Image (cartoon, rainbow, N blue to C red; front, side, top):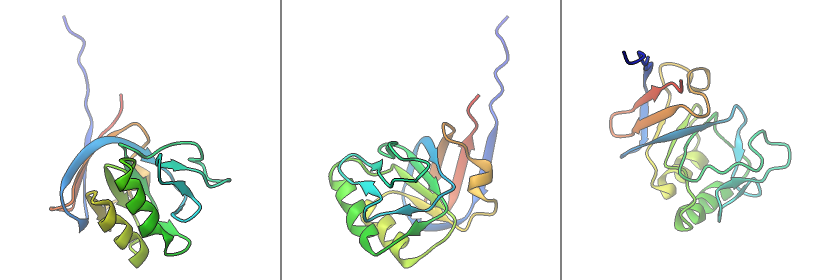
Length: 144
């Protein structure tokens, strides 16, 4: 007899920032991310000295984070990351600002904010996340 596999799905509803649908493994941080000087856009790696994700890349991941910090370098750095093929697949974040909105737009990655539950409380690194930017829906399949 096959062992029963329990798959736990959680659905969050929020507001569209950028449309489209993408899914992948989550990379979660409770710290804000700085675009200028905080990331290496060629590899998608967080390089900020004291950041909890230092040395980790968001390339090909669903980036879940509170929001942006720092200067307006966010959009240029994330635009370069997209051109280098190193941008996140999608973004889920708490605080909407003009710098993060522009960063999400130039990344061309589906993005959702203002969710009905705090994504930082629900999503963990390694969970599988589907971001439907068109409908503002984030589906989370918990890692086993």
